Length: 129
Image (cartoon, rainbow, N blue to C red; front, side, top):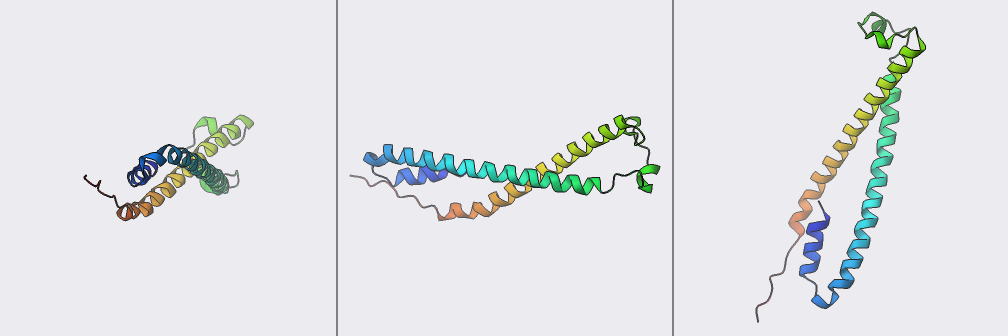
């Protein structure tokens, strides 16, 4: 969302002789920024997944009276190893889903915070000869 308007504003104010050099610099900056952004989001995703998994695992126990009295699917039988494995897979899926929702929320907030910066972009009208 950010690279196209930034490059457009940068190239409009630049003399044509410098545009090839500027294109390589802008490409390098875009790749570095996207690499940093992806690594930060993956780190946040892993952290959120671990936090959600630990929060969900706190409530899953054979000693939890609420869980024992719920009508759970037969495949989640907490008395067998296969049932515990199936329940663990479901917890893993749900914790990843919660983490993806959290990452989406972070990206939405970052986009909304960066949106007012568009008002700071000014373009120079081409001078007519």
